[in-house]
Length: 120
Image (cartoon, rainbow, N blue to C red):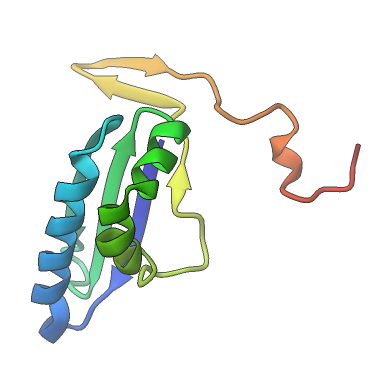
């Protein structure tokens, strides 16, 4: 599972974002099931930033977010991310060394109908 949070940050606030994101990465990647994370800035628009963190499963992601220190330091940062599109994604294919590995969907077969669907 991949957590992707995009941020729009004025240049005068960028140092604060970097400090907070580095702390978030320390806390998140210290948790069991977190595979790694990155903070990036767009070279095309230096006010746009992204925090991407990969977890081995949805359970690992949820377990990580339940840790007190993560809730205290990371969740407030994540709440400042841009909204309007999903922030978490399941990994369906991954590549390393030129080889691609497919992964089965983590979603239930009926999940494509959406949350709260009345279709039964």
